[in-house]
Image (cartoon, rainbow, N blue to C red; front, side, top):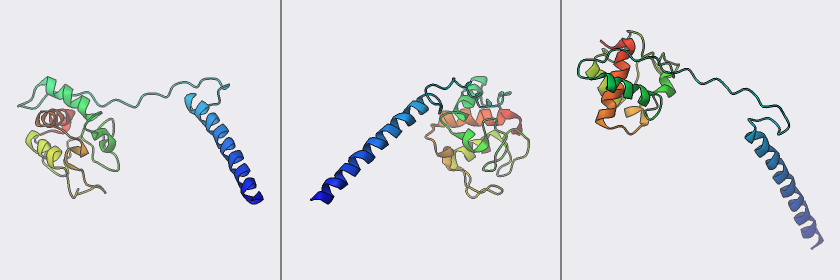
Length: 155
């Protein structure tokens, strides 16, 4: 019985210590990882924005390109693999140059790649899932393709 009481006391002390450490962690998290009495750090710079959209392809409008640019950096998740500047990463190719790896770069083919994905990719380690894993409707696919095409690599 005495061992049980001792174990219970140790458990209570351990929980109290964890709660105290959690409070410090919460305070530090609320202050950007700094203790409450530390001076505030300057905010981190915003990630580089996606490149400026260019001329829309035939069959799309400037509004499609603008909407596609917004999708690229939000809902469609393209920036995750292609980079926020669309210049590519180790995971996915540059979309701003004239080199196309998996298709010729036509507006229709870009839409098909977005809809179906790329499996297997010719030069990158992981396949691109259909719609980048997002849930896009046909209008959004068209807008996204118009934006990608307008970056300068479309043919």
